[in-house]
Image (cartoon, rainbow, N blue to C red; front, top):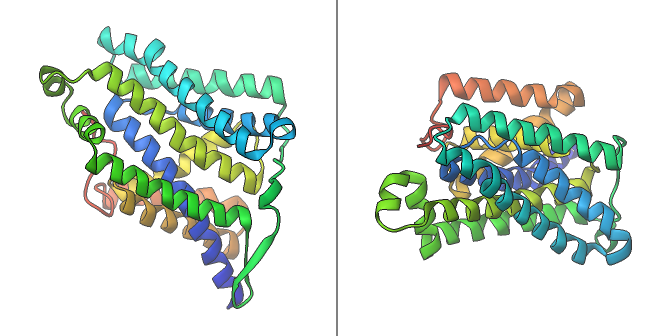
Length: 292
């Protein structure tokens, strides 16, 4: 029974990070109208920035710089690539192809400069583990994943629901034409959303890299889990994606326990296909891929 409790505890911690990825991705999808697979490159870049800087600056400073880098890359991606394409009347498929090109090119650069071997980050003050209950042990990194992930999701929800900036984002996400007619600077808002969503993904990728290490494809691998979480949740609200993220993580843990680690992502893929066919609106009632 102890192994079951351990698997559940691991899943709860990992699920908080999946939820954070889903929030960032879903925010970009709804505001920018693009299936932003380049989000995977931004997350990998953030993790590698921490890995590269930690020996000289320490964990905290490297994380702060990494989040700034992620925000700049996200904002620049919209300003110099997506925005000109939108102005020229590009369709979603064209934006997706551009995003895929950024992902492929970015991953190739990371592979060129840092290699393809698995790298580990010195976790510094987060070394060690603690017994939670009845023999269930979590590392301090896992506890950080849980606390930071849930805290970030809560902050996200409060900002989107109860601030003026959040109302502007919701207006742009629902109807860009009406938002522009009401005086909202749509293009600038979308760029800020790309920056904000990139920071959310970067936080999750850094936490996951601290836990399991990183390769150039880390961002794309965890983006898949975030996208599935968003589809299963059927909402961009904080609570919904947290529930879905922890559910997806539980399925992955169960797959690794009953079958093998090689089946974990395959099981998640089956769950995604099942929801898309049987309950496309997700658990909380809206098709995540239905954007303006």
